[in-house]
Amino acid sequence: MPAPGPAGAEPIAGSGCHAGCDPSITGVLSRRARRGDAWPTYRDTVLTTLSHSPRDAVLFVLGHLDDVQQAWELAHTLHLDGADVWEQLAKAYQKTDPAAVLPVYRRLVENELTATGVRHYQAAARRLKIMRRLAATDNDSAVEVDTFVADLREQHRRRPRLQREFDRAGLP
Image 1 (cartoon, one colour):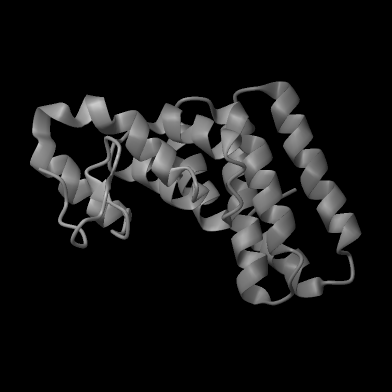
Image 2: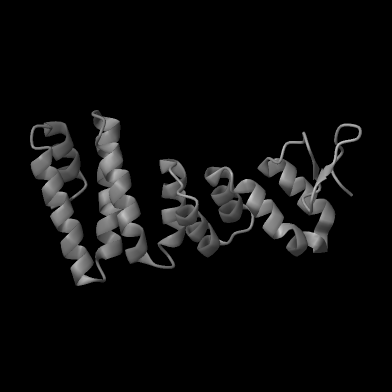
């Protein structure tokens, strides 16, 4: 049964959504629940609809379909740019491939350090600590992460509070 729409509104093929209805995650989920076993039939249409908003698409796949691999692929394919979603995704995907998330954490650290302030420094240090833990099993990755930390220390040598946060986190 399609979601109720304005009188005379044409349904969007396969989505259960009429023109003018909100294809938000909540709406999609409620339509999915009504369909039950028909979900596989509508999966591609729903994901195509959500792909217009990479953030919504990745969060939907990650949180509601619990498909970390597909969320990872979507984030790259759709050029996701939300740091908070990348962080959630990296946290989930690190169990699958720890080395693959290192560039994500690197971008998050670099973005965090475009601003000053203790909150930003602590977040950067926390992510660097995660990177070191993830890289610990691979010598090349461990060296790369430690070199990155050393480069950051040098680049931001005039930020004593950042240096203290790095020290407090036990970074080299």
